[in-house]
Image (cartoon, rainbow, N blue to C red):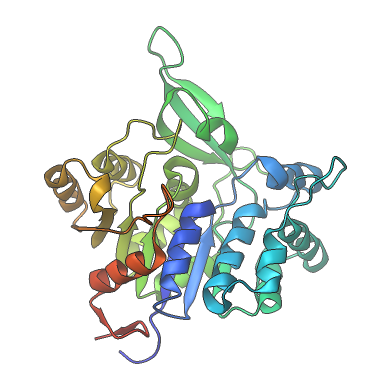
Length: 325
C-alpha cells in the first residue's frame, strides 16, 4: 500500500486528544469524528444561547492535530486559551468563540471546521459525528433504594452521576423523537478508512455515543478498516467507577452487539486480570495488546510515543510514515 495510512478516530475530549496526538506520529491523514452532546461549561453556554453545535470537543481535536503537527503553535495555544475575570467571557475558550462565529457565518459546521483547520495549518480533518446537537439519556441504577432504573439526561449529569450507568441512548432536541442524523462526511471517512479507532475517553459520553447514530453505526459495521479499541488507563469517576477493563468491552458490545474489532490496546499496569481481558477481547473478535502506554510523569495520561508504537504493532506497520508493510 502506497501513500499515508488513512486513519479515523472517534471520540471526544481528552481521550480523543490522546489518540490524535499518537496517530499524527504515524500519518498526516487523520480524521477526527467528534461527539456533539456536550452541555457543560463554555460549550453548554454557547449551545444554549446560540443553538449551535457544542464546540469544545471539536476545538480540542483541532488543537491536538495542530500541536502534533507543529509543536506548540501560537494558534493552537490561543485556541485553547480561556478568558479569566468575572464578565460574560469568563470561562470561554477562544477557540470555542471562533468556531461559534464560523458556524454562524458559514451556516455549515463541516465548512466551518475545514476553515478552522486551515487557520491552524493542519493537514488532518475534524468532523462532527452529527450536524445537529444531540442529548445523551442514560438509564442509571443505584439511585433509588428499590433498585429501579432512573433516566437522566445531559452529558454533565451522566458523567457525574453517583449511580451506575447501565445504558445510554441519544435524543434529538431539535426534532423530538427523531433519529440522530450522522454527518455524511464522517460516515464516508469511516467507510474509506484503513484504520478506525474507538477510545480512550469517557465511555458513555464520548465513545459509545458514536454507536448510537444509526448511519455511523452502520458504517462501523461495513468498513473494511482495521478497528482498534484503546482502553482508558483508569475508570472515569462517576461514569465508569469500578469498571474493569473487560467491563468496558462488555458495555461496548451491549450497545452494538454486531460490532467486531481487530485489536484492543490496554496499558499493562491498568489490567489486573490479563486473561479475562483477552477473553473479553476475543468475544469481539479482537486480540488484546498489553503494553506500557501510560505517561510515567502524568497520572491517567497516555504517552503518545508509546501509544503510537503500540498502534503500529496492531496495524502491522513498518517505518515511521504510517505505510502498510
